[in-house]
Length: 106
Image 1: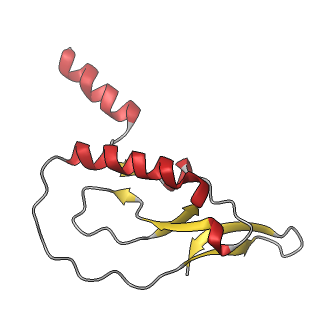
Image 2: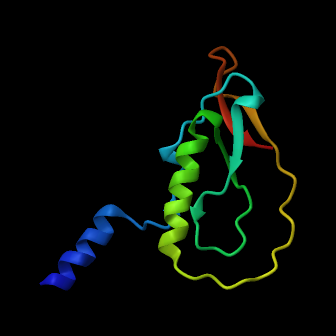
């Protein structure tokens, strides 16, 4: 019974090593309001920025990433290739009439 409870708890809470972009704001007014981050499985050896979030959520993201990396356990030392140059930007989303903006990588 205990094993199934732990399994249920794991699936109910999700994988603690995966960061989901839905947890962070993407709201912005200008590109300086955005920061590039790595979302997904934080246990991957080479995690290049693959998304952008609002810089106002950067501290929260960094705390979440630190916790996720701690849950990964020991990781092998490997050489990673340089990440591609993708800059965070504040882009119009949806209709130009609404002028809604969100952070994204270019």
